[in-house]
Image (cartoon, rainbow, N blue to C red; front, top):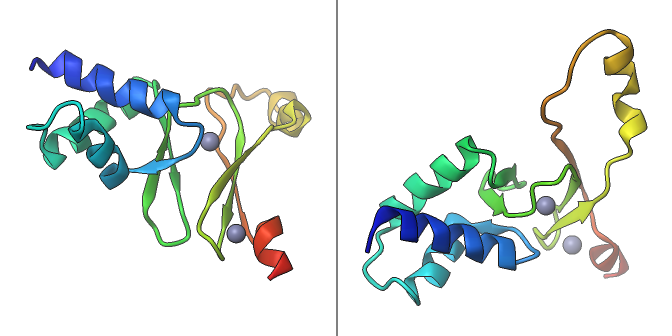
Length: 122
Ligand SMILES: [Zn+2]
Ligand SMILES: [Zn+2]
């Protein structure tokens, strides 16, 4: 199978999931369709997809990197209890101070670390 097909499969998988996946989770899922794909190939493709801005990555509490196929600007909330990552909208007003200072923002990464609603109930 050609490299572009592998890349496309990884991208489609991440876009089809509305949650954030580790490289291992991507590898396990893509392997169902491309049995001979290696973990190294998955990492390489994830790197190239990140570089082209087709996916984004989030660093969780455990320093593990999770990949996200949903690239519109959004904030992440990482729960230190269940380790889940949640998406939240970003209010554009937050950028105003930067814009007012005459700077131009290309990408915005907002990550909150804390405890999610479900873990707070426990
Ligand atoms: Zn939680
Ligand atoms: Zn996200």
